[in-house]
Image (cartoon, rainbow, N blue to C red; front, side, top):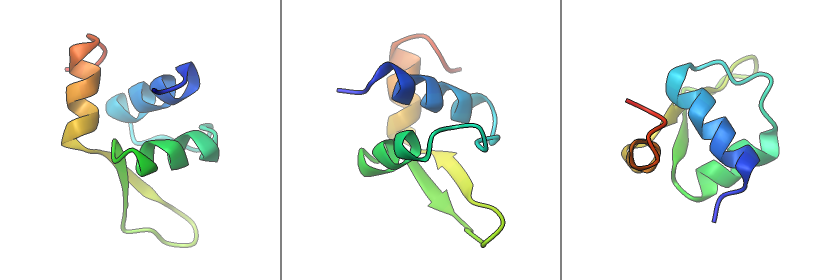
Length: 65
């Protein structure tokens, strides 16, 4: 089960790649549940993408298109 903070983080990531204000623990939980994944990480920037499973979850609750 996702916490409200994790759901909010997933919603933010669905709409934008901006994640600097998100709690790293929430992002870690989403990665662990395979709802998002890290891509092309550098020391200055982590590119985070919502997975198909993450989009399905958000679509099911009406929070992503």
